[in-house]
Image (tube, rainbow, N blue to C red):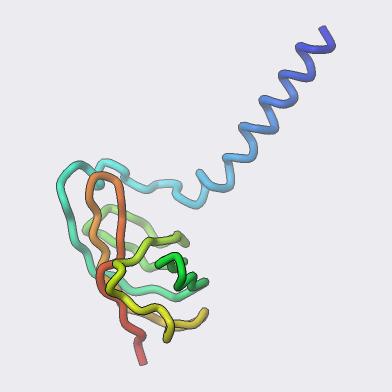
Length: 112
């Protein structure tokens, strides 16, 4: 009985840890990310830049072309993009390419 209670408690903790990540993407239409390639332009604000991993974290405005609400998320960027000039707090315009559920920023520029 004690082992059952411990296992139930561990399961409850594991399930609850996934809730914040799920809430961040709540309402996101994943069907819009089918097998075909889509490109969409959007704007947002830089939260974090990881140049050595070609990654950027943005809080973006809604992206109707992909069925996405406004949210904060991390993106891989094309290797041809230099992220060195971007800083947290910068307003940006970017183009995202979505293919088979994978999303990559293929263009990004700081707005004045």
